Image (tube, rainbow over all chains, first blue to last red; front, side, top):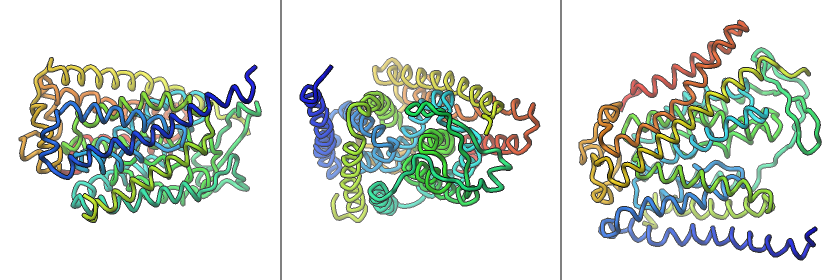
Length: 325
Length: 135
């Protein structure tokens, strides 16, 4: 059996690795920033450097996104949009694909083990799918600096939400609302820790539908996915147990991102050279991130993600205002 | 509360279709992208020109390169950058296939509400894919 001292070594190494990840993410912005400042710099760098850099950055983003409980899109869009020489239109298109691909890959196992619930996901996904097209349409129509400013404000808001939001493992639902009863939204999942089957049902379904209309719109507008908002919405507003909320969030994200991704694809706003290395890097990093959860405290990774979001949010905001090009 | 058996069965159907369609999407994504990057398929927009173009807005990029929009890429699969959109389209279409696959289960259970929700969700996704929402 390992002693506490024995365990401290690997733990220190992983903490070091995590902070190294943050440093790499921030340092990776320096050459890209130089390239953004002058088109000439971008044109003198070999084309293959950019997809390779994207792959590396997304690999590290994927590593921290999963344990922090946020989708990859919310980290991808502000960081790549601020520090790489790509136009925000293409970054948002790639961000949607990153968010959708991660959610699709996680879907089968979440559905099989009852951590995602289709009857809960379907009505909310329908609302989010409709509004995400509106968001995508508006996002491609607005000037880039306006979208950038709004994105910066939203990212800072997400960081604030992550700092302040409470979570409830098993929220108390005194009485399911009539709409959820009519839709048959309830379920049961096995909690591995306690070994118990836990029944659940939901309340405030109409408010949930309105909230998911807003979330879908923001997801389509900024290409950030919406795991950061789905989980608190399902958990705190509708009373869904935390694990089911996280799993169902993926299903909603997959469907809502699909409708916006189709819109971006149809309008030529997805460049494979940006989108594909990002998706592959993020998914490979996410596999390592899932293992990190078993070794590190989620709060350590979460704090690091909040720090990165704050930095990326400020950078995005200032870039949109033309104060930090 | 009893576990909902019909719900479990539709979830398993959805999960199975999602599993295989996602695998198909990722394979298409990686194979076409490798062919694009290694030059096995020529690019519609030359790779070395991209650093001058990817900083443009979508509208400017399309104008500068003459890249067609909508489903035109499907008829230009001999170009690496166009072929790479196949995997993206398959992944984007996974949800349509999955939702379509569970409609028979709802029909069998005469669950009209969820049949309507499924049909509406498919309609939204298909309309978005069709380009009806405009450019």
